[in-house]
Length: 464
Ligand SMILES: N[C@@H](Cc1c[nH]cn1)C(=O)NCC(=O)O
Image (cartoon, rainbow, N blue to C red; front, side):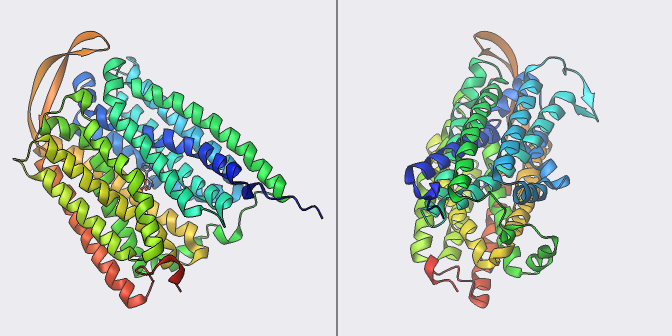
């Protein structure tokens, strides 16, 4: 029998594999958040309303929720393997981003309506919905790839770094989106996103060839582990567990207070703190930057000291405090925004660093794939689809303060655009409410942990 060493035993090779896969995360997270700094420009240049912007950003979850694509993704991954699923995921992201680019760049949709919605808004929304399928599929696939390449090695570190690379994409999107749009056009950031995803696809093809070599080095195939496979019968067992519902509720509410906030944060900077549109994403971009260092730090703390339920409770308190600070109407100085975003960054690091590793303590290992798919399904329904739309609708319905026409330089030319003014107090109070509800769920989770002994407060090695 030949004694070939598995490729994964070579540190440089497995980290190269991780770096190649992370390119997809970087480009995907960039596109996921690049519309946020464009909200004032979409309204000013293309005449969108806040409701239309909320409709478009909420489209992220349409296919994942209504077509069950998250569940389909789990099944495809288990049946067809990570190489094909990863390729399909990036291809969906690429096509979805190209569709958004075209929708914003073309003049052929101007004035048309489809199903009672502006054709341009609906086209961009359909593109974002397809992109949403791709990025969710890619998230699950990348996790499985890391498990395959890093089991027995630096797995938690690799997972933390992979999320950190994704957050870097968010930071770049928030920090540069408006500047690119002003220099090129409002479609410009999507052109950049499409090109970046083409690069991500090439990087993934390199990964796939490395992964094939891993198969060869192990004289096996990338066979799906039957333990990981999605089974419809598992759903009942998971859904009847109170701890699962408390964690899912915490996840949906916590992410409702963070992801939709990111979609409106640059506009909040313009409307409340008087920041120039071109620079509106700079302060919000501090949020993902902070998490790049803090998420692996808190994850490591949870591994070594435990206190997972307490970490989640603290995180929920941090995000509530941060939103409260941003909601106070007379606190309009930009340093307040910086402090609030930094506090939010701490909360955005605390909760995910304890939430995702806590799922295996609540749900038995053979049901984990199904459990993550269900959690992401509800997260998509509430935090990525419902709340972004709700906030846009609330802005148009209750928060409109007026409009004015101003002259602005766009792509080197002076153009007249409409500037819409909103009062963000009510949307910020809604985010406070989501934070408070998340605190309630975190407290209930802590109590349930004491009652059921999940081991959320114990270090990694001490769990039953
Ligand atoms: N299901 C993803 C959603 C997402 C949003 N932007 C990119 N992906 C998720 O929850 N990821 C975990 C995270 O904390 O980013």
